[in-house]
Length: 420
Ligand code: PLP
Image (cartoon, rainbow, N blue to C red; front, side, top):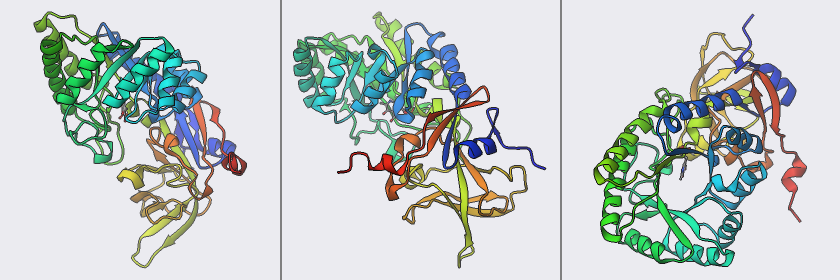
């Protein structure tokens, strides 16, 4: 008999029996371990630093509460994410509001909620925010988002720091104008700058290059405008282990080098070093999550490829279709049996591109068996959609081996809410 597949102390077959499939399973223990690593290697090691969780990677009320209890701040990127974080009890002061195309009402919501920091992406937003903050009677703390011109080694859809990017100001005249204006505007408090080079980075050279560029740029801004940053936000992007990738790196590999460069720069300049901020998303949550599916059809086509159809797909995990993400797949009941068959895991959405994993080795599977995809914690649940009217799966959080329902499965009626 096989040992049952366990995930952080929980029996996966039992979770499937109790909560059904498809099912997102999340480990609270893993998330808390990452928070502890951040404290040990960053916020407690280096004075005057902060870590905020990029909630776009995975946001539920339950997750917000976990992160909040660990003392991290939050990065949000829309009015909806802001609303959910506040609803979960997050202090708005600890929220950083991002976005390349914020709407007027989102800026109003952020200002009236007294969000700690707004990261301004472009000139028209800066003008608008000055007006909004004026109406609100506040002086809004902001950072300017800079595109450092670093082409990170990652898929181009998750690379953000290159010159041709939809995000931020490039370090040229546009930035100069923005700094000049921000320093003049009555209702704006220009606190510093932000950059984010890209996601799923498994080396630290892109961050190092970006920090070097940003520091040089800050030197020039001081010369021109006397502007000395009080905050330097280095974004997120720290990678994790997907199929075919190296292992996740400890956070120290990224932050130690960044801190060394920043400290050297400020020692030399004689100015006080700004607060340094990081914004990890994927690194905190991706490996904390797996998704369980039930096998439906199993068939071999004319080319000899074996397709294993499951009860979910791109509606709960669009990452394969979006940027050819690769996942490790494990059989649940047949866990530990010899993996003798090369199969392709197909989703049930009506798209040929709806494949969850190409050519993975598994034991022979049949209808009613279950499989799990590993490392699905980040950018799955939050990217889920109702294509083909597929209800969004439930989220179960396992803490110390004990499961609890964090998000219930959508019903057909849930999907019709709002339809007239
Ligand atoms: N910060 C900003 C501004 C981002 O745009 C992102 C991701 O897009 C993140 C942080 C988090 O990135 P990751 O999940 O790769 O850590």
